[in-house]
Length: 491
Image 1 (tube, rainbow, N blue to C red):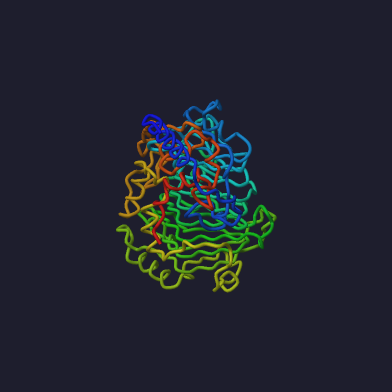
Image 2 (image 1 turned 90 degrees about the vertical axis):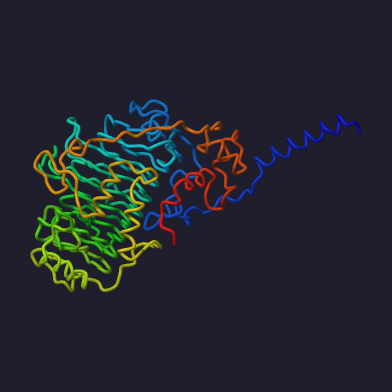
């Protein structure tokens, strides 16, 4: 064999080996996704949501909101299983409410290159089945074309929804309202600064949220600087089925709240476990802030729940007495609740007895694995909650204020002690810088560089939907999860 021929054969062999290395990988069979959690760290009633796994990929390349190709509204409006990734960071100034009407979708905000995505002006609403939303900010603000509304919500009796690591603020009604959904989770979100005196038709109306579900889990969320509804429990007011309303709240941190930690719950079963309440300067002005929960039956306006009350299990909830604005008498009241959570239950108008309303045993509501002691959860929530892939200045400030027990701003329409009335009171929206998006030649949502590193083919658009890197998640999901797996506590 000639030397030239030998060299040629060696080159061909090397090229073939390289090609095989790119495409080679174990092809796992498509798993039963109903038994696999949505992503590592997903927990609670919505943990088995599948979203857009294995479906089409739509890439957001524009911050415009005209519905043209490449906009977020365009991607949201598509049908069929799909994952929405981002090739740009910045503020999307919504021109009208944005509703997810077509389900089977994963919205992966963590893929945005740079500081991430922030929605402005109008409500972002989940009105579909099988939806995963991660690492999106919704800082609504005040727009003269709208009345009171929420930063983010979902209340239309849908199922299989999980909202993870999102930041919501500056609403004119509630910041985060989710109820009447089945198999729902809201986790690791930062919910702050509802606008106390803005444009709501009822006047002062800056609230945290209305929560509920059949079943629903709310865990490891930080609610800070709300005058009320932290949260309000919806109960069975609209369904008329108190036996189906099953809601658990665990490891949430509630800071600088109004007169009640939470209230209502007209019909349903509720677990309040290992939540961390931290009264702040505004709380100190409310003599009843020591209430862990205020319960009452419906006032008769909602016939489905008239006279019905919920049943509650309280355990391990902690009230932090360290705010410098608290009096000794107020601190003493908090100590009592820490010794026995039932001291924090107030039954409005004595419509039921404490025995009728309390359960010594936790209700079997949803399967979860992330429950922590309240004080440990407090530290982890401050470290990880919200769109923390890159925390913006707003979330950084909220976390610092919560940690120190202070506030920075007051409202321009009379609100005080950390309550604000419009975004300009706190300096408005920060700048969200974008960075050049990594090349994705085949448009499968995975950057070429990452594909090569993991022996995938950057010229094969089909391999993002395959199970070659994991028997549980598609290759695209493995990539997306790898960006943020570190934003959960280590076990």
